[in-house]
Length: 193
Image 1 (tube, rainbow, N blue to C red):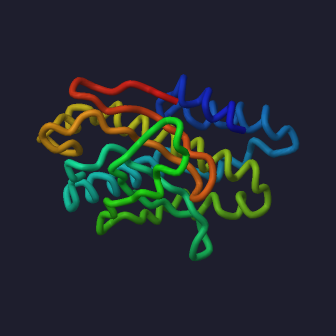
Image 2: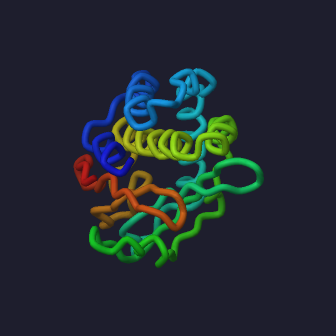
């Protein structure tokens, strides 16, 4: 699964094409899985909720100057999958433990997205397929959010405080592989997966 997630990071697709891409990857990784698993998931609505969560979060709690990396963690809790966001003052592509150095824990750090609740039964019945879908959605949601909101991410205009560049964004399941996705810079971003 790691190679497939890394390929998704290297060549992400827009949200309207996400179901097709995730379905192809799912079939290749888990031939026994039913591609119809995706039909129950409304990726566009899930992405809309993800955007709303992040906009509210960053309005309430802008990223502090000393934070160099943000981690979008996935975890199993309260009978569903959930997201949390933390920030760390250190980052190294060679240190998989950097998310543990969390110093930024925003008030609205947890997201209870409907799509993650819908995905939970799949995750329980088919752990590998469910984990891939959760990670794949996370990768695509984060990259698409940064891509379509780059005008709001410039220093002093939202996510980045003045003088705060670059900022690394990553995702993964809590306590498992960390997938470094991208660096937000003064002018746009670069994929680093």
